[in-house]
Length: 103
View 1 (cartoon, rainbow, N blue to C red):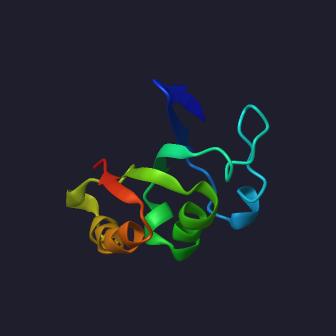
View 2 (cartoon, helix red, strand yellow; view 1 turned 60 degrees about the vertical axis):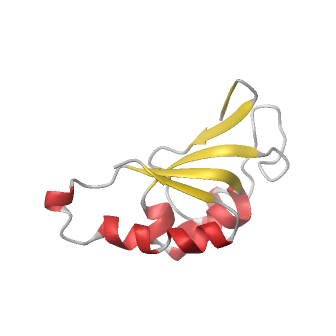
């Protein structure tokens, strides 16, 4: 987590998407992430393409905005990750989370 101009950011890198890794996530000042408002979460695309990832975003991280990244090049996206991810953006927005894609 980091703060820039009064905005709180979290970047999870290549985090394993299992709830047990996030339930006790703490900020650098010892606050539960549920108590520290996150303005922007920078997450790999499996956090939207997998239900367990969407659940972590909704229930644990609860950011105002989320930027999904590390998508495969569209020429080599044989599993359709980009299309699948975009099909779930409406669901996240219904939960009050604005979605951005960094492709």
